[in-house]
Image 1 (cartoon, helix red, strand yellow):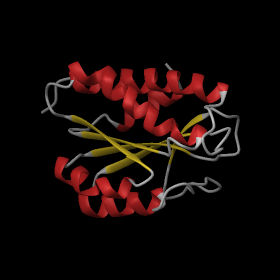
Image 2 (image 1 turned 90 degrees about the horizontal axis):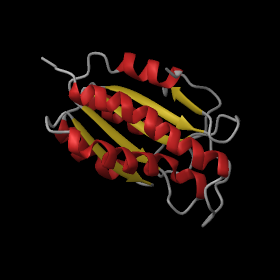
Image 3 (image 1 turned 45 degrees about the horizontal axis):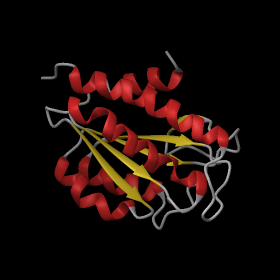
Length: 172
């Protein structure tokens, strides 16, 4: 089992309701990774989400516009998926501690992810997990980098397995 799956499974251990928020610009090459992964997860898990314990939100470049809908869903856990510049190999995937991570850049959105997370935390008191993928290119109207394109598929599969287990497992 990959380290992302292990950490994510551990962080969702006591989850009751999980919101997944995909962030990124579909017009800026690899910055689209978070939105693409969230869209793929929504399709993968659609038939397995009969208990209304998992909901997907596509925030693109203005995730702050979805805060009301996320608050209405009342998640115990929020997973944010976004392109994050860690200065690593394109396609590298990490779970980020938004409140303490140094050197990560969240610059393509109107509201920084940390500010969004703080607002949602104060409004919901939910645990927030940021899954960041290292972009290779942020070129306007550019294509996905080969490493990022492959990593998007792998990340979608890994995250999808954990979320399917969550949805299908019994909860109190």
